[in-house]
Image 1 (cartoon, helix red, strand yellow):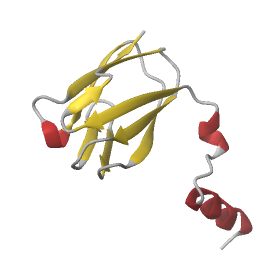
Image 2 (spheres, rainbow, N blue to C red):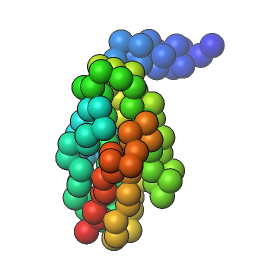
Image 3 (cartoon, rainbow, N blue to C red):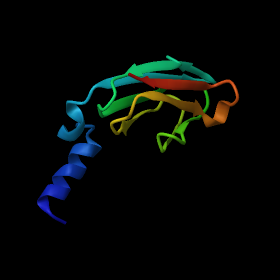
Length: 110
């Protein structure tokens, strides 16, 4: 194993943010037992961004968006993120697969 790979794995295991994600615009999304907060996010067109996910509920959740090609399952209390590539203007739906039909939201790209 190379020194770079070993160092990268060590940094990830310690929770160190890799430089590739450090300068990205960042948005927070709380998922809690079928509620999404906020349920609508506004972002800039053509800009890559990081979406921080936090499950504050008592059960598992699944952030999913077919149009964004993203899917992430989180245990209760877990935090994670997804990096979204630059998007064109429009609306992109997302939802909590485990709490449909109520848990739906959208990203509005302007």
